[in-house]
Image: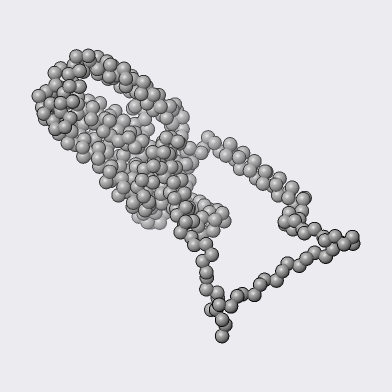
Length: 391
């Protein structure tokens, strides 16, 4: 029986190199000499440089198509379960399912988004006229109920009287620089109308190709991830797809629901330019700003116009529509990816600021992959013993 307290035998010492003819010990071989010779090292370095140059050249050539490719990949990943369901309903015909999904993309996503962008761009002068009209508007004395509001009533009434005396000019003078910066950013993001139309058509075409060859593209991505990092790379690729699907469900569906419900509320109470305001609400909801910046001024406008009843109705509706994203978006995102909500929110907002509109999908994917890899690395136990075969 072996004594468990006995020390293990010392490993054999490394052999000492034999001395040379002069009696001096021979030098130990270096790691570089053992691993590769100088010609092999030069060939490896040149091969890496050539590979990097080819990858960079490929990205340069594909640069005009990269935005459309990112959008198409995001949309196809998010709607792939719907495409498979459509294929089952259409007698297993992939071509019919691709045609249906492409038509649905045009009707349900790209047409409303294009109309929203074009409506905002075409009505820039109208919105500027609204701001000028409000800036020159003379306010009356505040109603009695304003001062009776709990907590904020006296301060709101005092501020209203100040506006009635000096007008809205000083207030808009403070807001004008920020409004100008925001408007210029919106126009810069919208870009030229022709370029937007071209990108949308490219996105539709690439989406159709990915729908037709989705399994092949997915297997290629998984093979690359597996070759890069083994099973962990494959899990990371699947996590990225789940994150894209979850964010698409949470952000886009919530934006559509809020803008549609907000537009219905504006139409019921009789606010003009419902189509324009609904388009603005959709863009603001996509940008994670929300619909309250559109609905709250409409409520104030109704109060000033004397429609107190409709103003109260719209205020209640605004509270519901403006806060529904707090429970609808997390529920939808959880259906796609089980990730912390703070991580998703930071990814959506940070990605929007860093990469523009497409960043609402890139940001959460990057943070989700990093979060998962760090968690797996921290949970991994170094030197964990394994049972030898046959034990």
